Image (cartoon, rainbow, N blue to C red; front, side, top):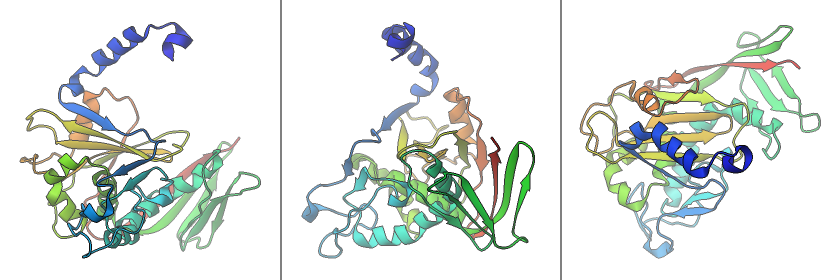
Length: 304
């Protein structure tokens, strides 16, 4: 496209890309799927499926449902995991995935301002937020002024609100669950402890920080990029993932991998982003809260 639009030869642009990304490509190999093509992960033949989460097969369990690799409520219509049994699909969907949906609920609601995005309402005991289908304007209703308030100036309106209780461990688990759902079959044996952690069968002593950044326009469809370490480094984790949904991008370590026989530092994702020479504005998310805690919202809306 740049060759057509700006006269930059494709080979020159490719050489520049390799030069700019040489540092991290020496350590990591990127792996991704096109977000607008239907993909089914795992064994196609139902009778031969073994659930990648609980290890059960038919007739111990069933595979009747279409298991969305990423929650359908986040807009996923292309990625499905064949070898996720109905029991695990129900348990994850009603548990850790609901925590993640609550965590991103405001951005899921605001995405409705853009063409092609469905309408969702964010509602807590303190406030209600949605987008009017007719006017496409943001609507805020306050139920409890002790838990939510609106502050306006000439240039913007700010919403400060108590978002209710959220289990941040489960938010991290949901992100990792989405990645495990699309792992290539040959990678699954390295993540047995990760899967045990997802199901609450074991604890991980400390989770590295997640990095989060925001974009002006939301993604049409959620997608994941994975970066697998292809050397024996004891400095960088084996698998780092990016998850793009609505206005947000998360970058995080997939913990519990048996190839990581060393302690993963809190700031390891910062080092990964430096390798990539990433210039986005990132903020830290500390998910080391095993019990639900209050989530406080602060959303700014510019006035036109």
